Image (cartoon, rainbow, N blue to C red; front, side):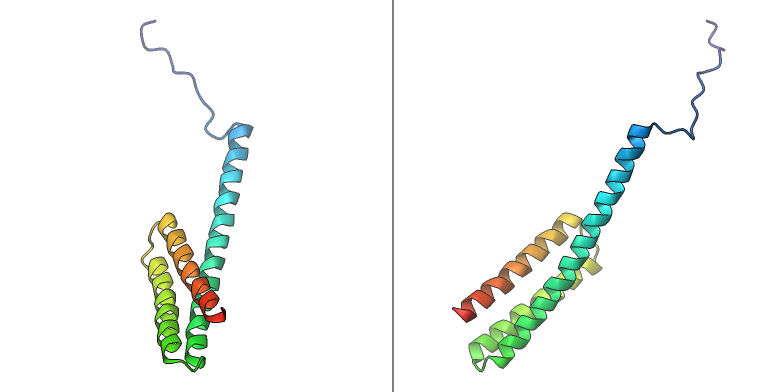
Amino acid sequence: MSGEEPAEEVDPVRIPPRRRRNDVAAILSALAEGYLRDSMIIGTATLALLVGVAGLLSGSAGQAVTGVVAGVGGAVLLVATVARRHSIGRQWLVIGAVLAVQIALIAAWTA
């Protein structure tokens, strides 16, 4: 009790099995989210560019301008969000917003 007893030694190599499973689950979850986010970015940017081309090919000046502005603008916004390394939440927000605008344009043009 003089304060000079050695502290209880902990083996730094041994990790409890429960914690190891949680770590693996967290890593797999992060990988799946990253893959899904990357796939959504590529798909949404491609759809945005297709909307721009469809606007140009529509034969209407209004649809051409709207399609090019929304298509190219959406693709540039997506790429800029990823290139500037914004937070994951902001990237998902931009993906959702660009996708919603593209779907709304397609729905308006086909109605």
